[in-house]
Each structure stands twice: as C-alpha cells, then as structure tokens.
Image (cartoon, rainbow, N blue to C red):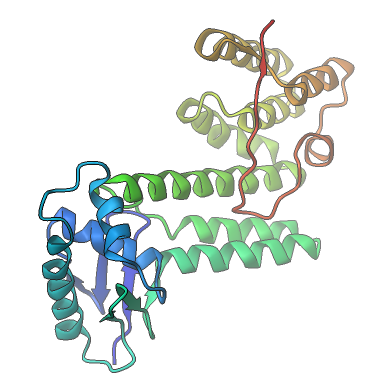
Length: 279
C-alpha cells in the first residue's frame, strides 16, 4: 500500500503516491487541520467550532461539523485502501484522526531538528547545520496557507516562529564554523523580512565585523536601534548592547555570540525576547 502524506508546511493537502487528495473547501480544510494537529486525540465539536469560526459561530452550531467529517472520512477511505492508513473516528465526545501509517511534513521537520540537536550536542556543528538545512526543505510555503479561523492563524504563527528559529540556528552554526562571509546574504535577507528580530541583528553584526566590514556592522546596530525607537518606542535590550560593546572592544566573534548572548535552546524551540521600555 502507498503511504499517505499530509502537508501543512505550505498549503494544506494530502497525497497518496503522486495523487493530490481534495480535502474540500476552506472551512472543511480548517476542520481537518484541527484534527491533524491533534492526531490520535479526541477533539470535541465545541473546540472545532471555536477553532474554525471563533466568536462568529453560525446559529446552526454543531450541526455544521458532521457533514465535513463525513466528506473527509470518505475522501480518506476512497484514496487509501489501507487498513493501517489514516481514518477519522467518531464518538460520543467528539472526533479523532488516527494517523496510522501516514506521515506528515511537520513530523519530518521535527525529526530533522531533533537529529540536528543530537549532532550539535556531540560537537558535530557541520552535521547539525546540514540537518537543519534538511529540516528547512520540509517547507513549501506559508503553513496552512489560505485557511481562516483562530486555530489556523494561531498554528500558522507558531510554525512560522519555529521556521525562523531553525533558520537562525543554522546561520549561527555557520558563524561558529567560521563561514561568516557565506552567511551574510542570508542574514541580510532575513533581517529585511524580520526587521525587529534582535538575534538576526546580532548575527549580521558579527558576520560583517568578522569579514572586515566594521562600519557596516555599526550601521546595523544603529539602524536596529532606530527601528526599535520609532516602531516600538523601546531601547535595545542589554543583550544587544553587550554585542555592541564587544564590537567596540574588538572581540565580537562567533564564539562570543554563541556563548554569551543567546540562551541556548534546542533547534526549533523559541526564545521570547523583550525590549526594555524607554524612560
């Protein structure tokens, strides 16, 4: 039997071999997304309604859910033909998607991240960077692209944060390996896309400084500080000031960045950084 694959790191869809399964209209896909990210757990109709419609639940309420479940169940049954494949169970409490032998791109991403963490812990920074690049290949676009509702939006933001942390971590490994020049174009592009992420600013400062572009590194700090003041009304955190001070002293390097400025986390985990309010 051909294994089913579910894709959520881009437009939501399912595949059997090379056949793209039609998961139905947007609302139906949003229902399926909730089941998929809660695979092998029961989800109540109330949770589905809240996740898809938020505060604007239609008067028909829970009557909306069974037709979607019926069509999704039929789609999976018709496409799979595998007793160990994915299936949707109904119970008195709610609905459960059994993944069975099916795979997801999110699981592929998670596993590559875990292997990268193991490689890094063993001192294999180059191997960890390769595995993080492999994790990035699981992505095909904006996660759950086009899906509406509070659940899809919340999950989308969570996944996007995991992706940028993965990218940041791989680029940090390149800096620690001494490959600063190669990291600059990617860091520059990412900082354009995420102009208020402190970690990107510090890494770009480091890469520029290490390649003899000290003036540009100073400009990155100045521009970032201005954006914080203009857009958020805050000052840089002590972390960013520490990186700036190291640059002035002439000891801003990859090892310093990795050891001093970033609270160490496993690849894929998130670190929330707060900015110090201006007084």
